[in-house]
Length: 348
Figure 1 (cartoon, rainbow, N blue to C red):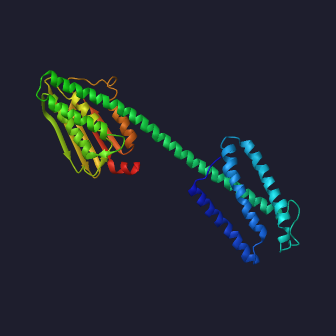
Figure 2: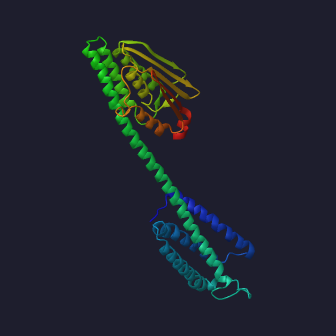
Figure 3: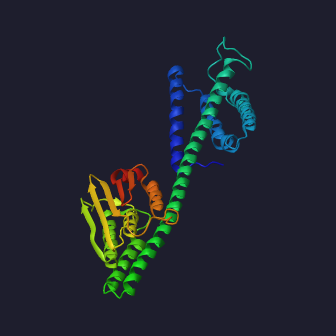
């Protein structure tokens, strides 16, 4: 059976008090006294409302038992009106009536004396059904949104689980190359990698992080790549704008930069990458351009790279981002704009 919360109970009580005060006040003005049968009628009306609100609609109508709902509703209304009008009102309150029946009032089962209470009872009964349907609609809508958010979180976590091993695999390859060549930069590379992994494990969760921390993470990654590669004079990083008071979802930008380092080295060993991060008016602009060098992109087997990050952007930033990717025979260029302020309002 449908339950009513504590707050909802208070609202129901206040509404019924307001509904009851008006007819009682009107009767007192017209008659100078409130008939005792009016108290009885008002006290019985919630039975109509809550029978439909708590029982008939949830258990019959919402379970697609339409014919049974109609039959039970009609039977209940007939029984209610018979009991309230014939047994209770005419028997119990007869001795307390001070006002004789007007001589011209139609009598019999189809008179106005019976028709008006029937109309009122039907209205209250239908009102309970409408309220039940409205409450059920909002409940289902809320549950649908919660389920949709849970599904998005599960998918997003799956995408991130793909991304992290992919990043770790490439970073270990970089350090392996330094160790194998007996480079003096190998210890520094291990320390840098440990900083990267600490950020990924302990700070880059499901919630947004400081944009400043995310940029420091990118700086460490680029520093690691500079240690691995031979000729990195053409690797440029330019950061402009205020980043301290803005937040961003973690590990979104690194895939574009990682992709640039993977494919941005020519046959002579020269790496040419231009990275710009500009923050202006709460908008983050990322520009990444690299040459297409030794390694050719394999869209079929590189799977967890750019397609992964596109899916994450669609889940996290919806319509608050714009991504443009241009590829020529010699260069690969990425332009990403994220409206950080609007996205924060959207998620709240």
